Length: 445
Image (cartoon, rainbow, N blue to C red; front, top):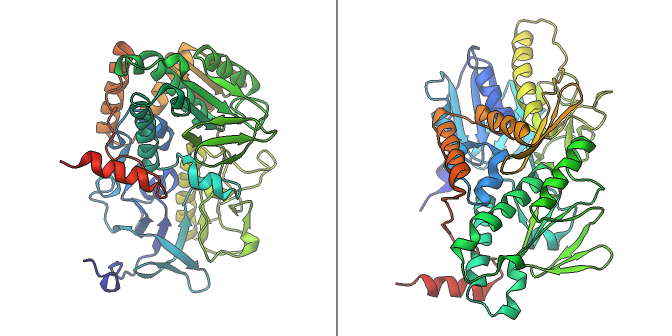
């Protein structure tokens, strides 16, 4: 048995300036890359040992890709990086006064601290929804969603018709890019894949509900993009409910504000995110679940402590609510912060961050996508779909991931197949004792 009291961070002492980075997402990963040619010790903390391309999590959830196709181990990414140290450990708190980071297995001092801990699902204080809904922010959560989808179809095939409908109703809360892409992918499975897998099921009875509290699909994008996406989804048979809020979910019934109810075993929650905060930050430095930063991404009220990406709230005239929670702000802030750290070390004047908006993309289905491009231009259909494919292949980490994802997509384009319809680990809720017993008995040799 592992003895946690005998573990330590085992980071070598150094006379170099030490940069500690909390979180290895788009921001943290690109900051490590950008600091590589500086004479500094770089330490990265993350709860998992890999970087994931989170915009493609929905494809893991809908059996389009395996997790390793969108993930790359940190140790492989930064192999040969002089004086770089990765530790798979959770950061419990920070102490800006002593410049110390506290983890489960020890403390570490820093010269510069960068918080790039990203975001987590926001359930808006609703504990019942948090308990029973399926979030989609991590690879394990995507695998849970995939298992749940496939288990619903398997169970529906052996369930009496009068009890089958709740297994074939799927509700997705939140019509942002994740919700739209999830709904479109599930609708294409219903049309092209599932009928041949389950010939005994009538998939005209499978209902996909996309629920949005605001009055449009894709609220972060333009009205034109939202209308195009809604039209594409409706052509795929997705039932869209706008201006509709989920009030409760008990694991079997979704209740909307207004009283309408839908029986379902599956509620996918993509209705909002909040920052993954770290203990030890002053209250004045936090607003609406994000860390307030100045134009160089330094945490307001603190010295040598920075925040980048989704966790950072930089209020500017153009972005009064902060930058959008997508990959590009995190990547650009990381690259800019590395330049400013270099300037600080040389006692040069730092420069404010300026975000270059490269546009927004969302895929709806086969050859159906929408794109908001610089210059207030909106594309839809095939050309937006091609742009989406190119951008996502381009930003995947590692040649192997690019090759795997590209070959998978080309295979699916010509065959309509999804080759990962495997229940690797059955999903059973912790409070479902009968379900746990059934899984155990069913798997006994």
